[in-house]
Length: 273
Length: 190
Image (tube, rainbow over the protein chains, first blue to last red):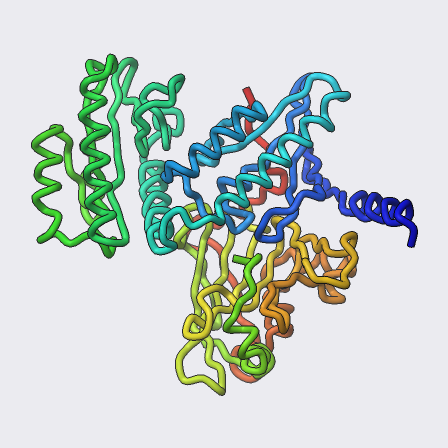
């Protein structure tokens, strides 16, 4: 085979990987980009008014690529923000709390370029989520508890009154809490989850929550904070009350935050209402 | 993770095939799926499975997306052997890449619905059965209760002598069936 024939074969092989599936008013486009866990990236194109929206379908956040969320891991977040800002990727949360990553185009001529960028973003983020920044046990413990806690809060709070994984100062991406509950205009409650697969990681999460609450009380937003709540994962293997109890007391006394144990999670409803 | 080769499977491939091929049994006539598992967006039910050659149980995991009941997965897991499921069916979702030398790039892509199993190298590969390749039959298998029969045939599992369980989703509620084929539906992108 001549090198020119090799090139033609490469080009044809790549081209044949493009596929589509019609999904209601959206078109799923299966691209030739593959992740390190051998999944081809899909993007979803919809028309919204006069614009075209190209999205990830919520698949990154929904774990459809068998990726585990690492949204609490600082190194992962740096990578995520790098790709998001370099490629201009926007995000929005659906009513059920799923994050959608997307790009828009007003002219059809720009759509291929947007698909190129969004596919590259998905490929990189899903692949990077495979890296073990933390132990698998730690990742799974956090992912499980965060998912359960978010679901519980969503079960009794209107979706427009709560934001998950939210920065106190969203423009500067500073002081991120697991959830912020907007009680009423100019008043909100900061909620942080404390879990960990080992005693050490549990302690570290207590220290982190302590620092976040202290810094929030020193920020320009301090007058708007009506409550601070620490939600404690009493089922986590790192939850050893006799060893971490004094750290929890310190967090409570130092920051005035309210402690809610997961097995008494109903208390959250009365605190927030 | 799928990209990694599963050493346990590669080194015990005969045992792996035996896990798949021999007749296995489940005992619940109805599989009621009412609550979420480790992931809040997925309803999950785990059923014990008996295999004639092993003493402890393996597990049949049935996952259904909360907001799209047509998006479901059946998985077989035997934790004493490998942590992740060793056989699986995906009704919807992402397209798998079978990264195997000798397979042309153009045909490495396997869209859903598809099954997943491991090859003798311990690499997870996706495949479609003849039924899944036939458009009409594949359409019929979007029904979870027809599809579990296909999954049971493919992995040789039965209830009693030659029966199959019935799956009920959210039977503890009013029983609305949520279908959201278009992921962008009802979302405003600012």
